[in-house]
Image 1 (cartoon, rainbow, N blue to C red):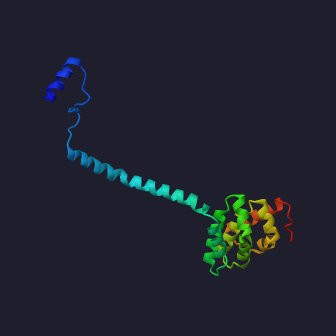
Image 2: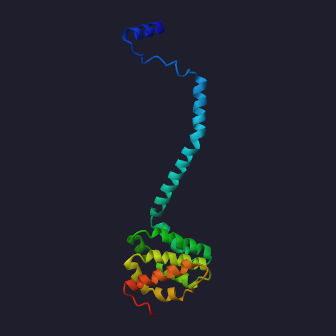
Length: 190
């Protein structure tokens, strides 16, 4: 009866009814819908999962450094350990925390700059020297931190670090640090 009414309505108004399913292009079948849904899930499911994982990684990377002073203290305490691996990890974490002048000064206040200098002075391998110099270079972006480094005797420790031919980054970090001291009018001849 409904089909007859719809057909009659179409004939009267010469337009296609919106509530009648089109039978020209597809046939509706519950099995077809389920298979299409499974195929779509299979094709783009991994893409959505990858997008979610990437977003979660980005958010975690952006917010974990801001979790507070506790992580900075832990990073400085890693510099006290005898194992060079832990010292490198601590220096690397301090370099990542030092993103603005306030955080750089916080690292200096809790003793991170002095510990980095001690680490650089006692480092026996190039990787440890490189991480210490990298963290010191990151700290030196703040004028107050450079002043604190100068007062701690950083220039003599940096100059006493041997140059290596195998790792050019050590020389680059050394020259950048010494140039930063020179730009702020500290005497680097000593």
